[in-house]
Length: 399
Length: 218
Image 1: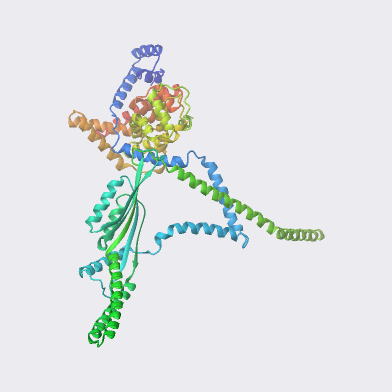
Image 2 (image 1 turned 30 degrees about the vertical axis):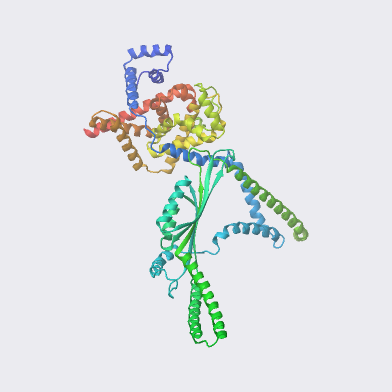
């Protein structure tokens, strides 16, 4: 490497990026300088080697994956365009400090009102969740699995209504909220699954949902299904259905009616004994009046028995056929735009914003009130402090 | 100094003068994309995404990272396309974001110090199969050639990032000097000398390794 010639020029030369003048200069030089000629040839060689690096094809599913990621970011984009994170963290920090100090300083009694208010808000939120939970002692799925054998044994008794003492009567139900790409396909699949398990569809409704305004042709289907599944295959079907789409919400529950069931069953037994006895009496009846009286009594007993066996049948039905409620929501597939949730989003944001503003007002009011309330103490403490300082000064002076 | 300039990227969108005049279709697609139309955006980047993937692959050395980084770049582009000015070239702006994202990705990866041994092998196997399909050379030649490609790839992704990027953009992807000026946001002189230096570096790496191999075989 003794030659002082600018190597950069040679590099540019092989790319055809030098001016005519430079080209002439380089060509001249290469002729005379062996070192630079070798360098030039090495670069050509390297370029050829690099040329061997072929263009890679995009891996399979690349565009689909990109599409998914883009739509995810699209959604995010809508909610947080370009944030100046520093500023927002600062704002958040101020809020946090405000909130924490508010809670720390909160003197008893003074701020109870606003605390109650926030509690109320929370309980409203809770209430929205609750309906699904009530009446549904949440079941342990494993415990359930253990039960199914019993249930089978029970069913093999030719569907008899009465139950032996150890058996338990449990009405099971499940709820699934599914988000699906294709409503129709999943709907069909659900119907198929239900029929295969020996169950039936009790209720089914389908509706259209517009997005991008009703004049827009884009529609998405929504619907709900109310299925009755033989209880031994309930869990199986339930789990299979959960796999049909994106589960946004699901729950499984059961209520134990063994006690009521047994109660009614024994009442039926008693009534049947009574009925038999009444028939005996009827045969022994001596006059019409007696006969009529017995018959009236018998009639009452019979009605009671019918009513109760009806109840038992209904329970058996509920126990033998578990209920699954499915809520289907279609999500816009690839080729369609994602729109129509923006309105709701802003609505929500507005609502939350107003809520927060109100809270801020309440907090600052309360703080102000607290400040005023505390003033006398500050006053007294201030006077005490002045006195103490004065005394201390005097003492020091004396010393 | 150069390093810092390299980092600018995403925010510095005003490129001054555009090199290629944009055709009207591209312009239309950009306008639609800026309004948030995803389909138009996908159409717009269709032409370039392979390039983005290839740059990422050469820079990072395995398919998994290449996929991730190039897609990340395109998401960034999608998010910031609103700030793109029509008077500059979309192509160079696109690849500017891609190169910066790849460099960031590489730095992040080296910080995390993950060993991508298995992934690299997988990817090389992938490229091996592909070449068998579309070439008519004998198997032995392919093997040797493939081995060369594999090592060459390793050398490139082992180079300091700015030189690796220069080689990839110029010699692997064939960008012109003026395009590279905009993509890398560097003056032309710097681009020139960087390409030259990168080539000398790579040439030396290859020579050194050949020497070592020779020593071993002897």
